[in-house]
Length: 323
Ligand code: ADP
Ligand code: MG
Image 1 (tube, rainbow, N blue to C red):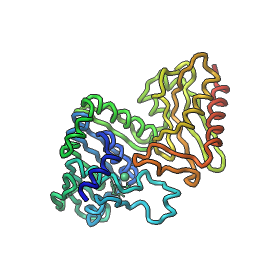
Image 2: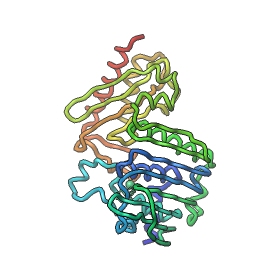
Image 3: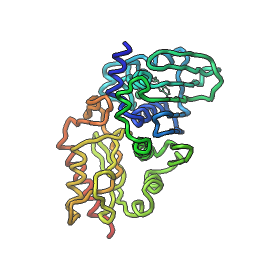
Image 4: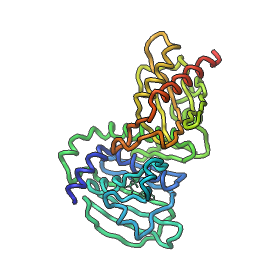
């Protein structure tokens, strides 16, 4: 059991940023509108994530750490229309298998909160504690029991950089949530939660980019695309500024990237990449997100249709811009 968890953990948990991703997604799924992420030493020794979501019922706490424990899918049909970010029930068991975890959580219905300790998959304690409604995860010493894997981590600065990038994408994909990211006691990112995508872009990327955006909005029966594409004056030398989110999830899709770049290319002399922040809302029936445990890749039932839609949205958006 313990070994299986450690192996499964390898698929989901590669580095501190993977832990932050899973726990922030859980906080979003729990309905939080304020999420604070604090790290030390690039998240290698210390990650604390606090949310004001619905909390976990005391009796459910130990169960949440079991492999394939998920409260999010009750019927098979749910798989076709997954609205929540998590659904595989692998994150908590995987994190607990390779870290030292302390959880404090309280629901609206419980008078007292619950504090739960688990290390290397072994429960270390559970007691009652006064706590505000919501959940705090404290995750210490990633891979403390799998030193071979710890060797593959990069420097604290590089690991912190991955987490910082992730937090920016989380903020871009959820303007309605107040995010705070603190690295070594310094606040690196802070969004207010009652703002729009453009303000978040301004906060993260600065005036130069925010002042040179074209708004995109297109929709058909099962897809809508909203957001911004950068004008060619702010084109980039690499793909790092291509952000797109599907149903609130940051993903990679070669079809979408190609469509964005092909649409953009018609306005460019040299081969450069655009800034984008596009939010796709897609009917779950034409999606397959269950491709990889980290849920980063995505397949479309009709890739060609998706390509055409994105390509034309980009091309038309840019051709109508004021020069
Ligand atoms: P999944 O997200 O795929 O369901 P996880 O292992 O990430 O699986 O989480 C297991 C369960 O623990 C979730 O289904 C949810 O019920 C509960 N949970 C985890 N994190 C939180 C949180 N921050 N707030 C409320 N419930 C949570
Ligand atoms: Mg999850």
